[in-house]
Image 1 (tube, protein in one colour):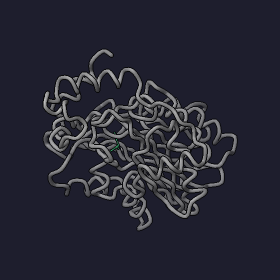
Image 2 (cartoon, helix red, strand yellow; image 1 turned 120 degrees about the horizontal axis):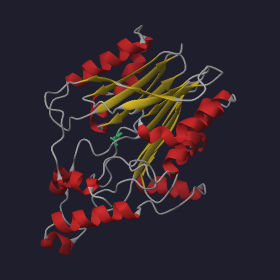
Image 3 (spheres, helix red, strand yellow; image 1 turned 135 degrees about the horizontal axis):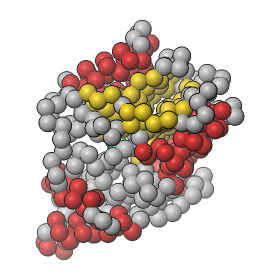
Length: 326
Ligand code: ASP
C-alpha cells in the first residue's frame, strides 16, 4: 500500500505502486518514486524546478525512514544535487548519523558521487529576478547579498506558496513500513531555513509496529506540534489511524502566533487503514492511494478541517511572481 501527496506525487506513484506489487522492499520502492518526482521539472516545489530562497538559490530538503529498524537519513538545505532523497538514503546506509545539512550535506553528496546539476530552472530564475528588481531597494541591490534579510523574508512569505512537498508512506508485502519526503521548501525562504521534511518526527515518521505519518504544507506548524511522531505515538497508545490524525489536528489548534496556514497530514496504520486531513485545506487538496487489488493508483480528496478563522493567505509579492506566466 502506498499513499502519496496530491499532484506532486503523480509522476512517482505509478512506479512505486508497480515496484511494491512486484514485491520490492518499501524503502527502495519509495526512493524510486520520489526520484521521479524530483526529476520532474514541472513540479515546482520538489527537486530541479523548485522555487529558490531569498538569495535565488534552490535549497533542497529530503528524508527517508525505515520503520523496521527505525533508522533514518535526512538532508537539509542541500544545493546543487538532483536527488536529495538518495543522498538522504545514503546518510542512512553509510553514516552513523541521521541528518546532514548545508555544506556538510554537500560534501557528503560529492563524496558518494551523487548526481550534481543545476536546480534553478528558467521560470524560477525569471520570477526571482523580477522580485529582486521590483521589491529589493536600490540601496540593498547595491550591497547584495550583504543586507539584512529578516524583513525581506517576512514580506515575501506566502503560506500557500509551497504547494507541497512530495511525501510517500507505504507498507510492502513483508509488512514493513517506510516513509520518504522531498521538497525545495518555501520559495523565498530565509537561506538555511529547514522545513519539516528533513525533520524526522515533524514531517515524517514510520514504525512498522504501528504505522506511518507524513506532512506537507507549513512545516513550521508540524515542527512546533511534532506532528508525524505524535500521530504514530497516538496509534501506539491505542487510537485508530483516524483518531490519531484528529488528535494531531487538536494539537495544532494550540499553536499561537507564528506562521499558520495549511498542513496536510497523511497517515497509515498496519492493517491497511489510512487517513488524510488537510488542516485549513482547500477542496483541491487530494492525495494518491494504491493498494494490492487496485489496478492503478486513485486520487481522493483529503478531509478538510479549518482550525483558524482566516486561513486564507494574504496576497504577497511572492505570490504575484509565482502566478506570472513564465
Ligand atoms: N512542508 C514543506 C516545508 O515546510 C513545504 C510544503 O510541503 O508545502 O518546507
